[in-house]
Length: 157
Image (cartoon, rainbow, N blue to C red; front, side):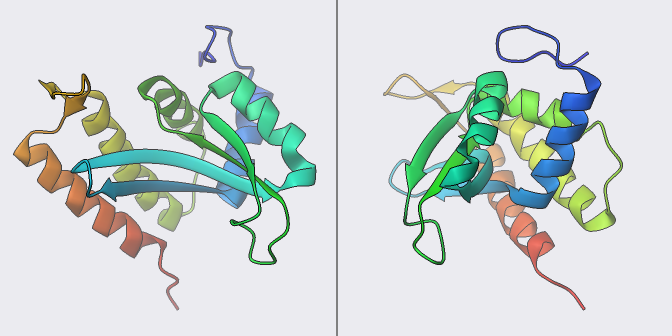
């Protein structure tokens, strides 16, 4: 049973709709932030702003961040963005995405992303600003995952 951010069970229909919608519109990524020398793991969806209620429902159940922007749209039209980057929200997304049968390309992306989520959620080294940092081995592997995830997303003929 998958629980939302409040501990309420997510029914199978909601989970299946999220999974299908995410694979059509969403993106799994690993970002490197040089200024802080750390990796950030994300699941994100960007839509036209008139579809905001859909992202509000996802935000309500999974958590994460939700914001409006005009910079994300190729046409410069208002858009709404949602992303999950906390340990809790990433774990919920991971559980939701694991519940289906995926095409090989997406399955490769998911396997890589799940490994990044695992590393992100098991960091142990405390750093000066109160967060957790990666070991050298974890940092190296996150860099490899980021590169492999980018390669897996490329269109192949």
